[in-house]
Each structure stands twice: as C-alpha cells, then as structure tokens.
Amino acid sequence: MTVSKSSQVRVKRKGQVTIPSVIRARLGIEEGSLLEVEEQRGAIVLKPAPPLKGGKVVGEETHKQVIRELDRLRRDWR
Image (cartoon, rainbow, N blue to C red; front, side, top):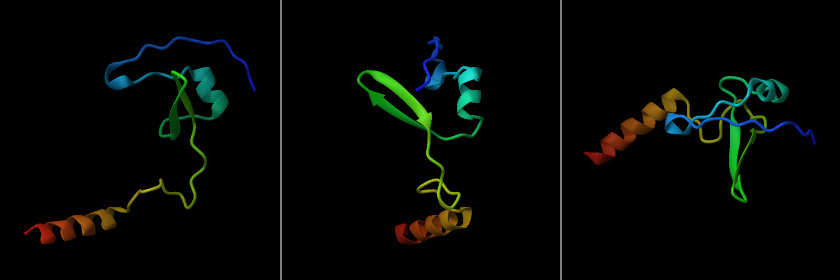
C-alpha cells in the first residue's frame, strides 16, 4: 500500500471534485475513466473500476437497441 500526503479538494457545483494530477497519473485515471464510488465508515472512496469484459459498460445498450426499445414502448403505449 502506498502512503501519500493527503490533499484537500473543493466540492464544486453538482458535487464535482478534481482528483490531484499526481494521483490520476499514478493510477492511470484519465478523462472518461470509470471509477467505483463507495461510502465506507463516513468516508468517500474512489477507485478505478475493474476492466470491462467485452468492451461494454454493464447495462450499456447499442444505439440501435435503444431505438428499437423506444419504438416498442411507443407502440405499446398507444
């Protein structure tokens, strides 16, 4: 386990925070990276999400699948 200096970050609008660049670089976090968020004993824990299987986020649908499902729901609603 790597022990590092703690830093403070300010919570911005919509709950956004900036992870210090040194930490992002060390953990390979870049724009678009997925992180797991947990609450543990009154603390917020962020950690890189495990690699995806098949290249998709769990529950992610293709564009065509979403359109088909919306069309089906519209037909059923009428």
